[in-house]
Image 1 (cartoon, chains in turn red, orange):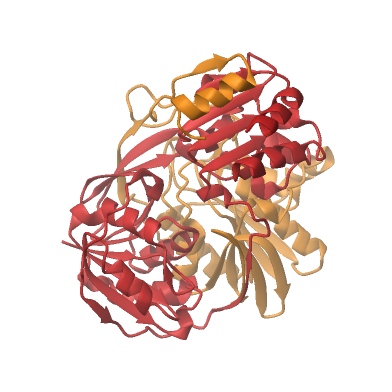
Image 2 (tube, helix red, strand yellow; image 1 turned 90 degrees about the horizontal axis):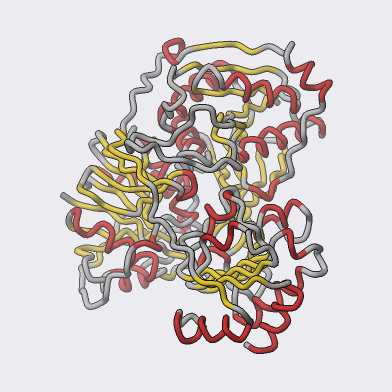
Length: 308
Length: 253
């Protein structure tokens, strides 16, 4: 049994954490070949070769892979697929773009966002934004998987796998990269932040939402918002945490003025530690909070900012 | 240009999901169902393209149970021109896999020849995030996934995508599949007169057999379980106590 793992490479650099966690998820399935794709991917390949559990590294360097566009990258993976029973990748936005395309080209179902490997054909994955965990068994000859990395520990380093080059596949010429715009703020990205401070309808206005941002900046945290706060115009849509927004699992999640609607809880209940600040002691958010403070947020948050 | 918009009937996003006690799935009986929120955004974008004179016809397609008719009527009430329902299951608990959905959509597209497909980036039930990409693969078309901005310019489209760590803009060749993310627009509510008018818009019913597609699932669901329950914690009496707990007990500050 052999596994082809699409390593996460951004701008020529290996994203070690995501890749090493994905290695942990799949190394029980067979020898792991890590595939590093990019305009420049050799250095990423050398880095991937050191991950424990990686048996071989393939490097595909070509200008057409510079931004890992789905169409050429999927064609490359399909050109290599013959030797492998499992084709996997950490569930980043790049992989979620590429892997279903790979699966369809191979006429197999993709199995997205797995959180557990039961055996070579059977995997656990969250559905309904994590409100249920489904165990699915694939009858396909090849399994195409993406891996939710937050549930696996990173594999260590110390390996010395051989690194080989592979030829680029033909460019289908369907799309071109135009530009990347990095997130404008200095704050960490919501889905990978260690700490998140989120505000809800209780914050009351766009102006008062600054209070949430100040607390976040004090903690070096990302800022989130409930759908109610977004719908009320207090916060932009890309801050939305919940079933229809982003699903997050930081070490610390501070929910301020958030009642805890089901759709919000679905997006944050896997956080390690949850703090809720709300003046309504009956608010459902307290049922999932590790630490609840029943207080007016306009008293508690400024005090928190001052004392931290 | 004709725009095709696939829509899915899913559990309403405000309903608490209950796993059936016997572990066979999620209970959908007598539960409020709605259009997948991401699909509403796709329908809205198609309507805006039509209003801007860039699209002339919007065809909504749903694949699933007969009740998905209601979802299509919602799309028609929002502003789609006609609808196609492919009845692929009798039981409301049967979820047609993205690969089979993509195959049916490919057959519909071969007939309809749209210039653009606008789809939700994922359905909030199976969370697979796959149908658009799979459809693009089967058609050999370009794909612009997780779109937060879309500009159609002749034979290509500029798609701004929500990616880890920011935004990426790509130029895709038309015809294309674009899957939409939350920031693209805010869907309108259908007005009562439009809801009435939607009842008279054409809705064709088909079956997977009409398109020669086998919808047998590739994945069998062995069980569906509740996620690990979270224990309610403690209430603290003051900000000082909260800070102390976070520092000493939780070790997160």
